[in-house]
Length: 416
Image 1: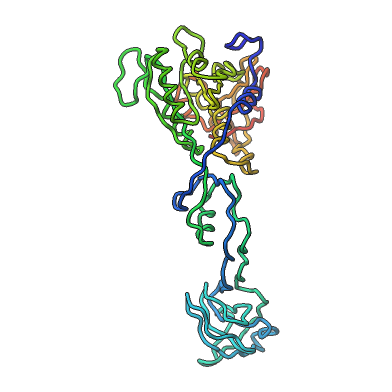
Image 2 (image 1 turned 90 degrees about the vertical axis):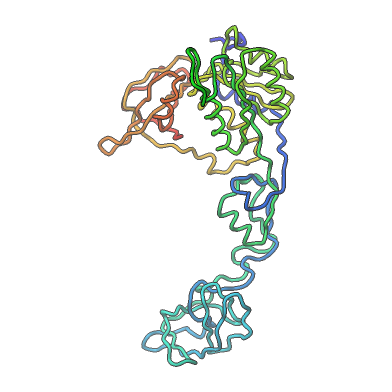
């Protein structure tokens, strides 16, 4: 089977992706941002703690701060009697210390007085009078407290370069007094929609026209994966028009995605425009995948450029297989184990399905529970139908050169 460039073999998904990743020149820029704007941003430098956290030993319970050894052996029939040395007030440094046989009233979060190494909960004490308590249960050193530096110490690396900031990470940064950090700039992705028949979503249709679907779904995929989507508009199938759109997009974006115009036809100018715009140009035109075979992978002066098929289902598949890995490089995000674990479920195939010979076939499926078993139901329809994606919960893959799958086969569904 020949590809769009006339070569004898269509590239496999792995070969095409490798070629693209090796050819793109990716050097993400960095910027300094406030932690209030840092959620889901990618760190460009390690975060090192400038201080101990917490900066003082504190209580995790309401009760009495004590020296644990003074409670050893205590029980209800034979309590330990402790003298109340004072009370710890929240947000204040206690101006007294715990002597042998002493205790101090303390609330959750209060700073332990000197010589105290544990807290007895109120429920495990009984008041004798205003100056004395009896302890009904012993505590061990460190019980019901957090020691100074127990969370992290000065010089500890809290977050690593290339990591994505999560809500709990923002909290940790605030806790060690870091209000600003260095992060990679979000990569800008220009989306160029092409086609004489394509009109904006809000415009009434004339005969022969279709509304722009792809730039909207593609924008959401880009934003979801850490990029900034720049919808450049809809451009006619004219060489000069498309050429200017590509040149303008390369000037303001880190990656360019052109939807439509990737197959072989009299008005399909994408490959020609890409090869004219810069070097090395088109790396591959055609991949052994369905939907999405006609896609173009290219690099223009170091920037990745994609020519995507016009079918909505092909956009979703080719984004996941090709644009997403390149976009991840542009964000500066490093691999973590959790990123390698796909969101998949095992299910049984409810119907027989056939596959196109020589292509990696991505089949849309919905999930149903029947007799306490999970079944994958093929959502049949051409790749140009957007509602097949709406009805689907995910996709299954029929490998290259496999003619299909039989009903009842266990499949792995990659969830949207």
